[in-house]
Image 1 (cartoon, rainbow, N blue to C red):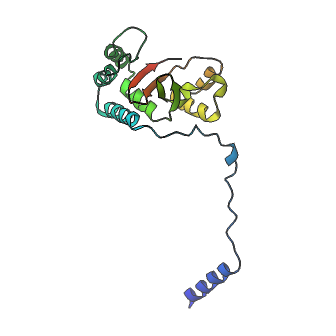
Image 2: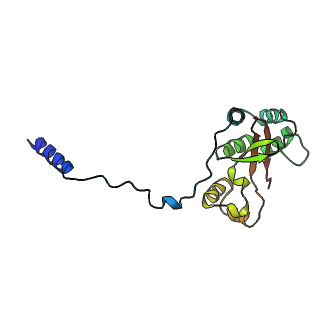
Image 3: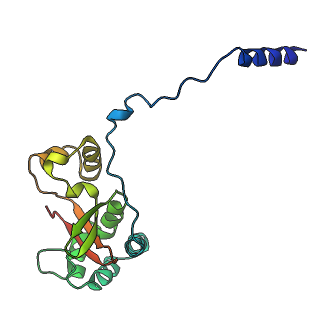
Length: 180
């Protein structure tokens, strides 16, 4: 009998006109600063990203260099070194290029229109002008480069981290650090 009374009470409460609250946006939703929306990756770019992720997971700097060597004019450094030698030095210094590539690919990308077509660039924040560093960009910059780096960039500093670019035809164009 007690269960029946509870059921009657619940039905009466529901029938008493308790409407759901009106749908509203979350408080502060208009002020949320989100990174730019991403367009879908072309198949060729997605395939290159997949190859880089496989190399990051189970490959070596030699595998990265072989993929880089498949693109004439690929850039990894300004020292005139081969990609293989440069990334070997980076590894010896404790800066694993495969891990850096994987980290970058975890961020959103920007798309640049160039004379050669679209180029997909990771991380998206590396393409920003100092005046365009929003709170969302600052969060990502701090996470990737460390606290205070967004302010350094706002004051005209050079991007100190890695930048990775892939052409819309899937050609891996560059993977440089401290590119500015």
